[in-house]
Length: 235
Image (tube, rainbow, N blue to C red; front, side, top):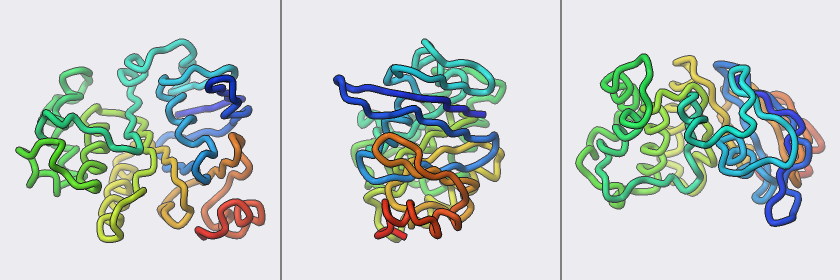
C-alpha cells in the first residue's frame, strides 16, 4: 500500500533523512522505531505532505504522491495522528470526531464512520459533550486516532501513540490499534521504545540518524546486535 524509495529530506540545510527505503503492505501494522531525533516524525510528516523531500518517491496505493498537497493526500485516504495529539479545543469530542466526515466524502456514510470510531474507542462516548481542552493525554490520544477512523482512512500514520501515557491506559490503546488492523486497515507507527511496539506488529524498521539500519520481525529486532546497540536500553 505504501512504498518509500530513496527518500531524502533536508530541513534548514540539514540532512534529516538519507535515502530511506521501506514499505507498508496493505492490512499490516509496521513500526518505525528509533531514538528521539532519528527522523521518525520527519518521515511521517513527509508522507503526509507537510515536508517536501529533496529526493526519492512516496507511492500510496500505486499513486506517486510527488507534488500532492496534504489535503489531497488525506482525501486519498491517509490519516495522521501527530505525537502531540492535537484536538480542536473549541469543539466537543463528538464534533471533533464528526469533523472529518464534513471534509471528506466516501462510500461510507458519516454515521457509519462515526460509529466505527466509537466502536474502536468506546470510552470516548462518555466524553461526547466535553471540549477538547478538557481531556487527559490518553483521552486526546484516543480522540486523535478516532478522527482518522472517521476520515475513513485506509492508511493510518500514528506518531508515538504510547508516548507519555500512564501504564494504565497503554493496554487499552494497544488493543484499539489491534482492532483497527483486524478491520483490514493499514497502520504505520513511529515509536521511540521497542518495548512499546505491539507484539502483533508485522514488521519493524529501526531508524538511526535518518537512515534505516534494520528491517525484520519484532523477535529478530530483539536479537539483532545493531538494534541492541542503538536502543538496547528499551528492549
